[in-house]
Amino acid sequence: MKESISAPSATTTPAIKSTTPTISAISASFETSVSPASSASSPTSPASPETPASAALAASAPSAPRGWALAGLSLGYFMVLLDTTILSVALPAIRSDLGGGLTGLQWGVNAYTIVFAGLLLGMGAFADRLGARRVYAAGLVIFVAASALSAAAPSLGALIACRAVLGLGGAALLPASLALLAHAYPEPASRTRALGIWASVTGMAMVAGPIVGGALVDSLSWRSIFLLNVPLGLVSLAAAYLFVSETQRQKQRGIDPAGLLLAFASIASLSYALMKSGAYGWSSARIVLALAVFACSAALFGFAEKKGKQPMLPLSLFKHPTVSAGMLSGMAINAGLSGILFLLPLYFQQSRGWSAHASGLALLPLTLPMTFGPIMTARIAARTGPRAPLTAGFALAAAGALLQAWSNADSAYAMNLIGLLLIGFGIPFIIPPLTAAIMSAAPRTLSGTASGALNSSRQLGGTVGVGLLGAIVSGSGSFLSGLHLALAFTAALLVCGGIVSFVWIGRSR
Image 1: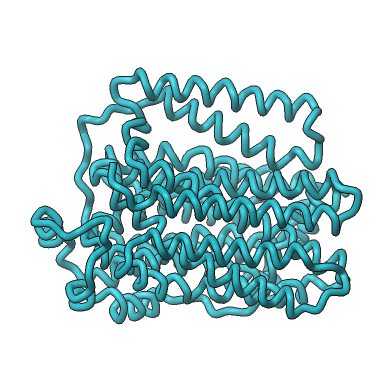
Image 2: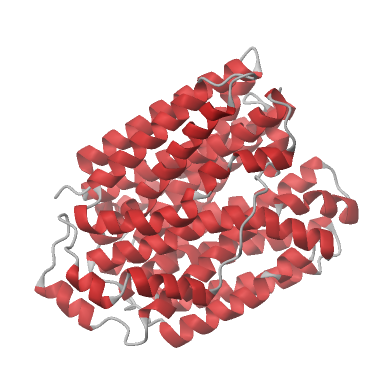
């Protein structure tokens, strides 16, 4: 059972049909939903009312068309997410060309994930200190260069090293892009709408990655999936310099090398332990050592940030209930979503006997709403505030997970369809309002740090979800019994996320 759980974790991304968005399409979508006129006529979030200060900030927003700024930043985010989904379909071709066993291929995936997760927090702090546009541009240059080198990799070891560098570039891109969006859209209502478009890129990348990757691998070679990043990155870089204004640099903030190293050590060691526990077992020496490194480095990180004069992650940031609760909610939703996307393809293929292609098609009711839902739900959140959409989203996702927990090998697909639709429409009610609430609650001088912390918590939540649910299934008597228990646990976790969101997010100090 362990092999059936750990092996597909890097390769079971569903293959489903979509069209890769262009920068003009994203910009056109923005102009209709986040125009200055619409944001001026829409009421702001009750948790973040308009003030003279926010009006002044609006006046200082970029003079260039903000639609193109949003399009360029969204394209960079799309490129990072596409790289994580497009690789799965190329793994067999990579193995055939470069050699190496399953472990080598897993490291090709995990090298990116570990570096990406470990550096998100530190890169958010760098965006505050050096300027978010500088960090974003540097991340793009690194990502494009590493992509070109990956396409030319002569061996599997070289490809793994390039994937680690890609993780560095992606970690710089993600928090910096959120900080730039917060700077470009100081008005809470228009910011929420912009983040809705930005969040819809997640669904687009999930849908486009496997189908675009399969077409490139079949028609050209596996190396072409990395070359695809080069033109996308260059377009995003040009948009960043032409339409995105720089954030204020916090020059007084020093570098916190101890915090950076300890944060990387704690997140990377925990990610490694969770990803490899299925292959080696929780009692193996390497997993126990990784967990010990995590415990020690996490404790030292907390102590260093509390006592340091210029901490990378000021603990005062978490005094705001919206920020601290938002981190927990972010972990909960990513743990649930990643666990579901990990288990359901196995269920469709192992229990129902469907092909990988049929399993991908079966997941369309979950993934397709994530491509257009965030744009619509962001409008709702801009009018009502974050608490109601978050609570509704967690309730929908929990109901969908619970419905999936009742599925058996001979159950009608209609039950799966309804459950997947509930999850697919629940996720867009969570991500845009959650991101907007945290970015609005955090001080503008710490927007990059808050973004890095949110994405670190979400990335860690996804890793925890896959590791924990995989362990539940592995420890059960059969796959189906373990699946039922794991999905019931997921539903309970999502209910807890909804309760946390309803009680604390949007509250004052």
